[in-house]
Length: 163
Image 1 (cartoon, rainbow, N blue to C red):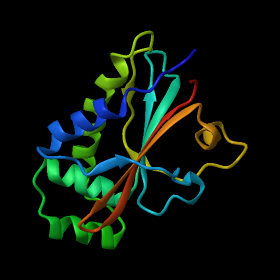
Image 2 (cartoon, one colour):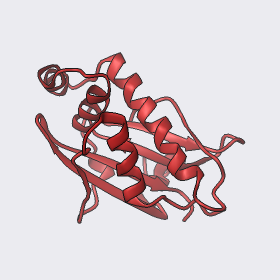
Image 3 (cartoon, one colour):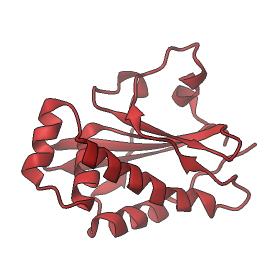
Image 4 (cartoon, rainbow, N blue to C red):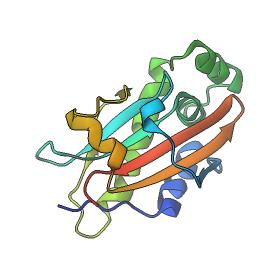
């Protein structure tokens, strides 16, 4: 069953609404190598009502710290500290999970898409090539968003398992 990705502009509009300013994310020309995802990268699996994984939102720590932190007005210095320690706070993870929850509306309005809900955000560990999650390396469709934040470059990668 196909699962189409929303327009990039629809997703960046939602991000702008969440953080109150332009999210400084733009569609990247190069694809982020998920096999080399740095420590502190998070994933939220997009699941339909039957629990089937149809897609994913993968975000590196600088993006999580900035987006999640900006939504709840965490100062830039505290965001930078989290990036330097390699782990986002529970409050920022919860805030980023809410952003992912709001992004799901962009998926759910795409005609003929199953309605999806994002799973809890967890640390993304690059899966083994023969694992069930290895589809992320050859996703049917993907959008790579890149941003330069006060504490480094960050990425948000949106994946569709079945394009």
